[in-house]
Each structure stands twice: as C-alpha cells, then as structure tokens.
Length: 434
Image (cartoon, rainbow, N blue to C red; front, side, top):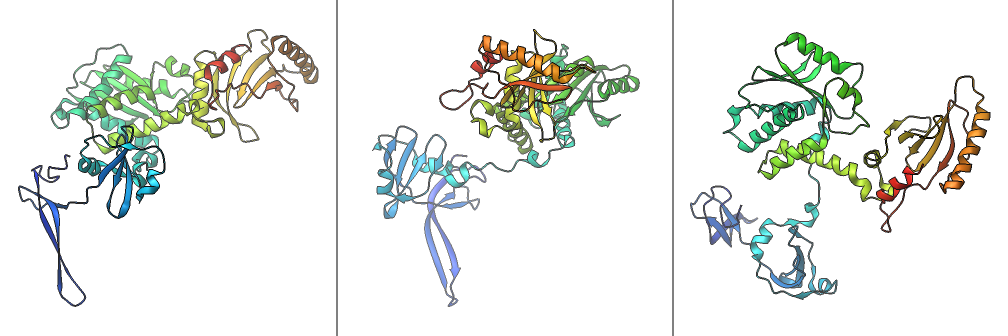
C-alpha cells in the first residue's frame, strides 16, 4: 500500500504529531512528543516519521548511498529494495566507484518498502516443506479443483480461474473440449484411487497422484475398472499427476492415463500468481514446485561437486532428449548411484551406463558362459575400437565376475565450460560417439 494511505482504512495520512506517556521510577510522567503520520479519518492509526536520509552518491541506477546522522551511511539496492547495514560514510565511499547522485527518487517511499538485508534473502517457511506426503498434495489438488465450481467465481475470481485452468488442461490433454463446471463432486481414496472428480455428472476425472514414487502392480488399470463398475455412464479422463521426475511413462500411457507433469502445473500456478492470487496455500505450493524445478535444472549452473540427486536427474533428462535410454537409481553394496543406460547399436552383448561421473561399457554374460574368457575377448575388442575412434576408454582397476560386468570406462566424459559449468551440448555430442 502507498505509504501516504492508512493501512487500516485506506484514508490519506497527514503529517501531525504523536505522543507517548510513560511513568518513570519516581512515579512521574514523561511525555514523548514526536512527528508522526496520522490517519485523516481518525481511525487511530499513527506512525512515527523516521529520519529521512540524504542521497549523496550512486552506483549506476541500482545502488544509492544514503547518509544519516553521525556520519553513518547505508546502501540501498533500488532494484531489489534491500537496505544494507550502516557503516561510516568514508568506509563505504572507499569501496567501489561512486558517482554524484543525479536522480529524484522518493527516498521515503523506497525505504518504506525496502527490506533489511538480514531478512531480505531468507526463505520463509513453506507449508509443503513439512506437508510432504501424497495425502497433503491430494488435499491441495482437491482444493484447487473445488475452486473451479461456478459458485465460487464471484468469491475469488483469480482462484476460480486457476481451478478452471487446471480442469481445462485435463480435458485438453484428453482432446475433449472443457465444459463449464456447473456441478462437481470430489471423492478422495475411492477404491484406493487418490482423487475422483465427477464433473456435471458426465465426466470422471481420475487423478493418481505420485510425488516421488511410481505406479506398480497394475494399480492404474484396477482404478479404471473400479470407476467403470461404479459409474458406467461417465466418460473417464485419467491423469497421472507427478511433480518429481521419472525415466519413462510407458506403463502409464498403456493404462490409458496421461502424464500431468510438473511444468504443466507450474504454468497454471504462475498464471494464477500473475493474475494476483495472494492466497498463502496457493503461493506456497507454487514456490514448492518452482524450487523443485530449480533444483532439477541446477546442473546447468552449479559445479559438479554441488550436484545433488535432482541435478543428476535433470542432467540425465537432458541427455535423454537425444539419446534413447533410461535412467534411475541403481542400488549396490556401496550405497548406489543415479545411472543412465542405453544399448549398443553394434554389439547386442554390450550396453553403456553412466554412473554419475563415470561412463562404463557393460557386457552381459549368458547362462553357463565362461565369464573370464568373455571379459578378455570383449575387453580386447572394445579397447582396440576405442583406440581407433579416439574414445579414451580404459580397463577398470578391477574386473568383475558377475552376470553383468564393467569391462571399460572413462572418468572424464563430462565436458566443461571455462566458468566451471557443464557444456551439455559437447557432452551429448561426445556420448553419441559411443
């Protein structure tokens, strides 16, 4: 709100005086009179008029140097509206090149909206940091779906529109025109299906909600069969809602479900924010998904030593766009790793596997095959071809003796830019050579 309007009633604020009465230790009364903004409508609001500093210098158009009393100064970041701690003015002037101030900013208004640097970059607690179960996400999806009902249009138009957009997108991915939602019945855990939404007594939206798990045990088809038995007249629109990522959705599509992935929901949520939604639950869920999305794409900007599980998933998804393979978590005695694997086009016995920083060539032994002989023959062929093609494969320090064995590897396949970030284009081009 504008600083010249009362935050309680919206009436103009006028310059006047305020006073505080305090009793001292001698039982006397001390009156503190100070300049203040008071509400013209006399609703009771008043605010002390703080010292307004003088702007004495600037760095470009984004940073201003403010001079207070006692030769104390503070830097105001105009772009992010952040106010940095006070220091002696000479100390700040000695840090960096400052120009004479030539602007006409309303400093009082800027300071009113600015945040102190200690709190400006602190991430506030998010409901979905703690409500991590699929049931919590189910509740949000039910809540958002319920807002699509026409009855709520006049109560909160932006939230209603976001609910309508969510429902409309489900119809869109099923190539069915979205109707106006005149009636909606939402049922949770119907025959173990996460969410069943019946629209206009005509359509059944089936939502199987997965956060970090996958479908299993033919559950998706069972849900469809249960809905068909209970509501044979309804047109089914099944979706598989997934905010995290998985390598493929083949079994999902085979069961007649359409994957509804994180980027699709982020678009809906961002549109809602752009239209002015200020509901805390809505904003928390948007920030929760955006933070997850940022983590998945962080492989583009972070050095390798800072890559976490999400960064490796994002890296493999980028490779998967051009190399026909799968990825996932591989458990082993050492604790496991995130891997990406794809088949050799020349040797059906072999396949390639990325074990995070290491590229491995694997060979699969047949039943009752002499594995030592297989290792020797295939290793010789692989290293010979690697030498011809300049692939820089080497014999691993230790050769295994299992059904699947690593027979060659390269530990520097990831290509880097000069600034220490991954060069994804050159990395993919290199992997294609294998």
